[in-house]
Length: 177
Ligand code: GTP
Ligand code: MG
Image 1 (cartoon, rainbow, N blue to C red):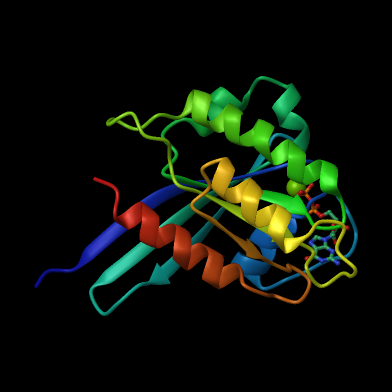
Image 2 (image 1 turned 90 degrees about the vertical axis):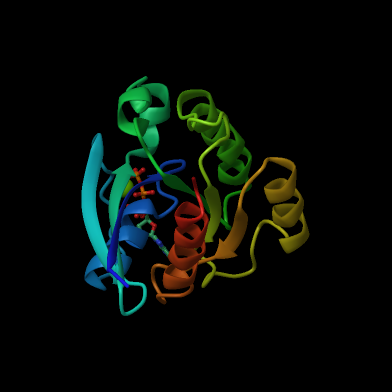
């Protein structure tokens, strides 16, 4: 059997300060900083995953500034994306509500050949903090109602569930026709 290489463009979107850059930096460089430095435009990172003996997955991560939802550049950034993470902050319910706006922006601009939306995982970030300002049940309902592929609680600070979230998204992207 021959080897197989996948290349996926993955968007990381969501409101300002929810931890998108922190998640990407933890995932790619295993680093975390508690100091906030807002992203300007978009940052890029690449993660290579050996999925099996014969399969390599290359994720091209597009870490997009939260403020870009108001800047109308997203259509350009989203072009030919294979998958998406929408991130919110469990300490800030507004960022969960705004995840719907991000999802609608995504689904209006990225449509696959068969007309279906790209797989999108919802990340409940900063799960190391407590008590959360949102309930598991409300996230469950939000995720199902709005067509997410699923949701995962993550912490860039404690390196929790980032690999798991990526694996789940990769499974969805690999299954795409
Ligand atoms: P923009 O680039 O402005 O859109 O923000 P962003 O979503 O990229 O947020 P960023 O990763 O810069 O993080 C914002 C702040 O949240 C920083 O002070 C981080 O240290 C903090 N932060 C990020 N992830 C976590 C986390 O998992 N736990 C905790 N406690 N803090 C976090
Ligand atoms: Mg950022």
